[in-house]
Length: 322
Image (cartoon, rainbow, N blue to C red; front, side, top):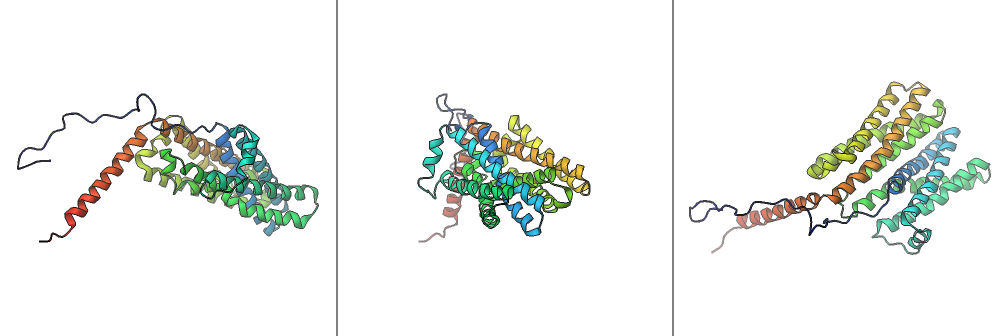
């Protein structure tokens, strides 16, 4: 800044690129395991959306679609619980989380979503398989469908609640990314397993979910700007590009081959693969952003500069008295 009409002051020491704190990273990487956590995310989205699709099939009178999606929802609940317990290390840790509900903890809330969903979806699937207690099975299916959307999206809140920059700053978009990804996977898997004449609702869910996922990921990356770099480079970048290619290929196959069973199945395979790859990409991108200090330091500096600029503007805009 120039003083008294003189020359502007020059910085004697150039800006340095901050790399670590005494050789240690600024953030500690999450201790979550791979592939346990990415697969848990994928199965939660697939199972939650499948339970919702099963209720739509029940209302439309599509027994093959209802039966398949109820079984998928129950299998995903069981598989997701296994991956979660394996990541936690000991089964009793999961049981301890069910002792007290903590509304401020996404992990605690998620446990109270997963447990009833697993129970209700299992009862609904059991009724479908055996033909016993159809009314109870129907009520259980309705309950599982009610817990389906929260199950598909609560993991986004779990990620956003961490200090990992790329997850924390994406708290607005991640729930919609996970919801769209789960819908694409559920619809896609049903298109693979169910006869074509009963896959109308699955086709619509898959296409809408895939388009929504792709659009929201684009919006998220544009808004995050520099923070979104891990999604475009390295291992995470390759995963996200593969996920986008698979998802868009699935949409194209689904639209072009709408009247062909084999085209629908090919589209379904691509959409399921795209969904699971998206979860791995989001996970690996977060890990990368936690390793690199610049994703912590640069946004902090930008926020500080913005606050100082706002305070300076307020002071200069304030009317002078006296």
